[in-house]
Image (cartoon, rainbow, N blue to C red; front, side):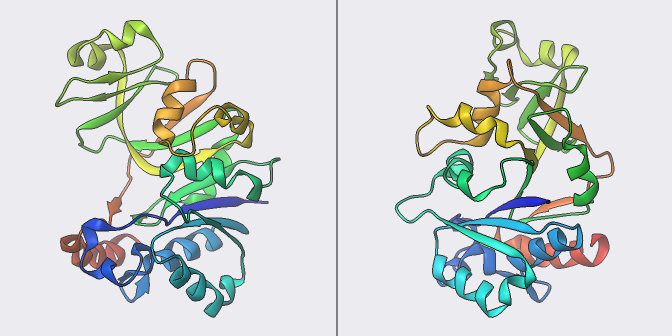
Length: 251
């Protein structure tokens, strides 16, 4: 059974004032709420079970799903009532809602892309996590070795480096570029339930990238490059019109 998680708990502060009255997940783009677009993309790719984490205007999301008959899918809600748990904490809290025998795909609710999710899911074998990455320009990059194993992270503006490997932490950006591959993260990844025991000592709230960076020296955290990736983060008011054009051209 293919399973997935959609991150839909965020406050959507960059989409104010729209998100003063509705959650980011229900902001319409091209006539459809963002959440519906992601769910339909997952359903078309053969995903059956979906876990959605909620916080901001959570009941609006639940009512929307019920009104749509859960889109004919096996949808479970993970409530983050007291506080936002960030990406890692959100996954940890929802752990009991997944089938422990198969990996699950994680997708941000505000991401639009041309990714074939069924094809990406089939690449989950022989790794504990698989991160969809590209050569998109950004300030923050994930670092991979020649086998596309995650080894670190860097902010090329500040020079900050995170890695469980001391020799990598000591490198400057020029050395990193010469010895490792730098790719931008897409917000789409595959996660194996075999990693859940490693999350047990973590607090309720933490980021999933920090978790991956902490365990990549003894777990198989790999990257997969999609060369023709077309991806858009619908995170700001001024991107809504661009998002409609993106949908017409890429989806």
